[in-house]
Length: 66
Image (tube, rainbow, N blue to C red):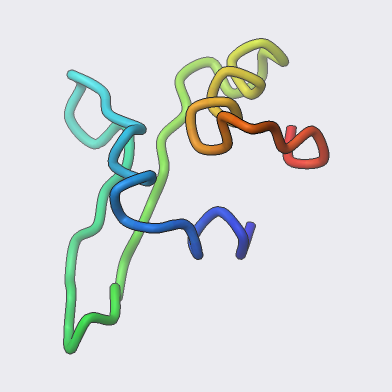
């Protein structure tokens, strides 16, 4: 999980969703430190959804993640 949150902000915001509280959320930033971050993954129990999410964040691949 740490490697996901260590990604650049520009990569994390690719996880967007039209539904409220879904997708990437960075709620509070203090001195460039994010106090709360979350990623929403629709249909996270489906392997293809997890693979799609992984490919969104790591287009070059990250098989161990999903």
